[in-house]
Image 1 (cartoon, rainbow, N blue to C red):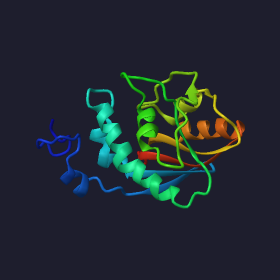
Image 2: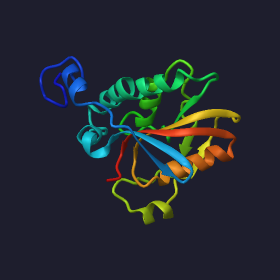
Image 3: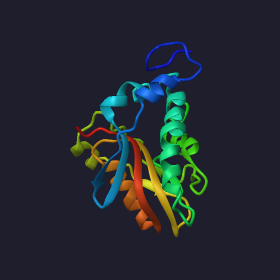
Length: 191
C-alpha cells in the first residue's frame, strides 16, 4: 500500500512522516445558529483525501481521521468530564458500502464518550454536494432521532459547508431532550 499523501510505500493509509509533518490540525470554531462547530482542518487542506470517500480507500481514510485526529481531540476534551457524553453521527446511512460518520464515531470514541449508532437518521436522502444554500433550505433532511433523551452529546459530521445539516440535526436533538455540547467536524469548507 502507498501513503495517500506522499505516495511512498507504507503499511498505513497515511505514513508516519506525513502524519507528523502534514496532518497537524488547525482547529477552528464557528457558530451555526447557537451551536458551536469545531473543525479540525480547513477543507482545502484535506479535500483530496476526503473526496476519496466514495472510492476503495474511503473507509481507511475515514478510519485514519477518526483514530488519529478525532479520538485525540475527544480524549483531551473527556479529561475533565464527570459524566458520560455520547457521540452522535449525522445520518449514519451506509453509502458506498459504509457510513462515513459511523466510521468517525466508531473509531473516534473514547472512554467516557461512547457512540450511539444510527440514532440520528435522515428520512430524506437528498444529496447536498455542490448545492446552494437555497436548495439545501428547500430540501431539508427531515432527521428522526431514535435514541435516549436526557443525555449530553457531541454531534459528529465530516464536513461543514453552510451549516444547514448541523442546524437541522441540532434542532431535532434539542427537541428530543438531548443536550448537544458542540459539533465536531473534520473540515470546514468556509473560505
